[in-house]
Structures are given as structure tokens and as C-alpha cells.
Amino acid sequence: MPPLADRMRPTTLAGIVGQDHLFGPGTPLRRALDQGQLRSMILWGPPGTGKTTLARALIAHVGYRLEALSAVLDGVKELKAILERPPAGTLLGASQREPAPVALFVDEIHRWNKAQQDALLPHVESGRIILIGATTEHPAFHLISALRSRTEIITLRALDLPALRELLARALADEAGLGGRWTAQDGLFDAIIRASDGDARRALGALERLADRAEGAELTLASLESLGVIIHHDRDGDAHYDVVSAFIKSMRGSDADGAMYWMARMIAGGEDPMFIARRMVIFASEDVGNAEPRAIGLAVDVMEGVSKIGMPEARILLAQACTFLATAPKSNASYLAINKALAAVKDSGALPVPPHLRNAPTNLHKDQGNAAGYLNPHDFPDHIVRQQHLPEALRGTTFYEPSDVANEKTIRDRLLWWAKKLESR
Image (cartoon, rainbow, N blue to C red; front, side, top):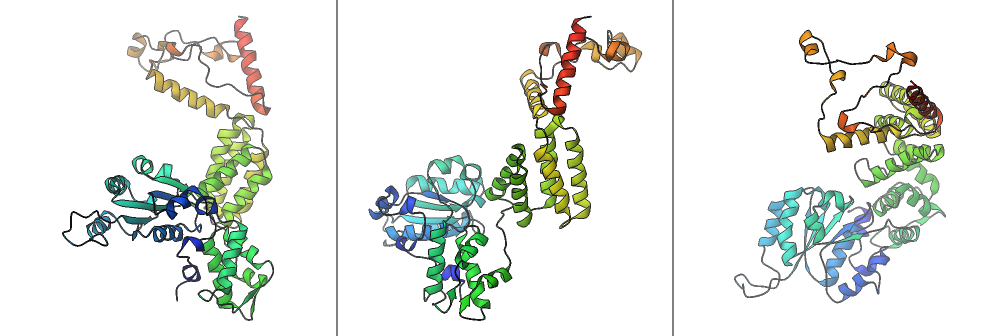
């Protein structure tokens, strides 16, 4: 028997739950569909929002010929085979007839490479194919611009609580689903939804597993706990980077609680602890920097410890680094400095090293003027000396501007003190 999620898959727009803001009665897209118009589009949204179900319902609503490909399994060869089939409603050789439109559904379209996506373009542009693509990944990063310009990007929302409750209640009662053979304890649906992170497929799968293991006529919260809660965390897609972004921004915002929560989400979702540790090493330099010089050392030590200890104990080391970095004073002055310096190199090219800074390991080098006029700071009071260390074309340029925060304020004050000392000489 097919899984419950497949058995409960609606075949018409009327049966679709959620996405009313796009396809509900009276919306522009729905009015066009009701008039038999279907345009090429990309359905973009998180897992379990019904992209495949919706695509098939849209095509059925306008009565187009449905062809389907999986970008994981199929390629240009399968696309060509679809295009070579006789159009529905025409006779072989009847070239004078306008071919019936083909509505091609491509699941996980982001997995096709540029050449494969290019193969779609002439057929989408001519109208020979009405393309419905489905993707969980951001189209701007995974679809070629030419394909995006020829399709409408439809952003699907994660299903909300009422929509998911309706799906679960329907599955529990419907003869195609669980046929009303069980009842659900109060609060069970909401617990399933929380554990499924808004993914309808996962929610229906959890409900089905509960029914398979049920010992009585009621599905209970206790039985759900026995299944274990698997937190959704996509380690390769947009969901992954959204959680990582929230983690970094919480630490940058000096919110230890927020940072700890997002880190816990990654850990519970099976994220590689070394990935988390590496991100904190980068953060220690990029966002804390010289405001708290101990941060980079602690982060590196934690990364080394995580690599040797492993989970679950490594979570304690990660927590220490997370709380230290979140509560440390912040400065991104070093990060800004290297970006400014790299920009100067890009704009100015490889400027010559001033002669007095050049290496002079041999007499020949010295005869060429290398190191001539170099002033060693150790030979001067306070171990500082007025000397040009930048290429002449960049004289007076400042890359590193220490902040007035914590230890970096000490650095700033020291630089100002040095400048006044040199001016007085």
C-alpha cells in the first residue's frame, strides 16, 4: 500500500490545503486558471508544502497534457523523448494542426545543470512546453537567469497550523487514509506538527507510524514520544543556511540565548559539530577580533577539542565557545581592514616595494639600493620611528581603524599616543 502521504494527495485545486494567498478563489492566478490559462512557473518553497501535488492539480485544472520528469533521475534524453511524442488529440503527419500544449513538471529542477536547463529554453519560449518546476532551493542561486526570466517564481509558504491540522484530521477520517479507525488525543496534532517543522509529508508519515504501532483505538502523545522527535535541519539547502545565519547574527548581537538555541537546532538536526566549531573560529576573528584577543585562541582550542572528543560530549565545548563569543566585546575592524587592503591591491595592482623596505641578503642587493635608508624602530625611543611602510601611491592610506571597544580601545589609544610622539620629534 502506498504511504499515507501519497494516498492523501489531492488531485484537484479544491482539495489543496494552504497557499490560498496564491491560488485561492478570486486571486489573479486562480482567475487565470479558471479561464484555462496556465503559465510557466517555478514553485519554490520548503519541503512538505505540496509543490508536486499543486503542480499536478494546476495542470489537471486547465486540462493540459501532463508530462513529468525528475531532475534527479532524468535529463535531456528524457526531455527529448517527451517532445517527440505525438501531441494529444492530433494524428501522425497532421503537421497543419497546432500541437496541444504540453505541461511539463520537473521535480527538483535545481538539480539540473546549466546545459540541461538551457535545453528547456527554446520550448518554454515558444510555448511548446508549459514548464512547472519545483524546487526547495533559492532560484536566484540554482536556476539560470534565462530560465528565470521566462518563468514566474511562485513562492510557497510553509503550511500553517490550521492547514496542517486539517490535513491530519482529513487523513485520520478519510477512507483513503486511516478510515476513522482511530481517534487522536487532544494536543496530538499540534505535537506532530511541531515535530514535523511544518512539513506535511513528515506530519502524515508520523501519523501513519502512530497508527501502525497503536495498541488501542486512541493515538496518544505518549506514543508519539516513543517515535522520537527528529528536528528538520537541511544540511545542504536554504534551511541550513538560514539557521546558520541566525546563529551567527545572534552571537554578533551579543544574545547568548538566541545563539544557544540556533546552535541547539543544528546539533539536534545532526549538523557536523566541526562545521559549528569552524564557524565560531571565523566569527572570533571576524566579529570579535582585537576587542577580545583571547576569543580566537579559545575558538581554535574548542575546534581542536571537538575533533578529538566527538559528540555528545563535544556539545559542552561548543556551548562554552558560543557563550564566550556571544558575550565578548565586538569589533570587525580587522575584517574591514583586510577587505580594504584587498580592494586597494585590486585597484592599484602590484605596486613596487619601497627601496628601504626591500630585502638585502647580498652585497649585490645592497649595491642596487635595497634596504638603503631603513630605520630600525628598536634604535629609537619607545621603539617607534617615522617611516613610510606603504607603497608611495598609497601614502597616508588607513586600512585598520581600531574601535573604541574593550581591548581595541587600548590599541587605538596606543596608536594615537605613538602619532603624538612622532609629531613632537
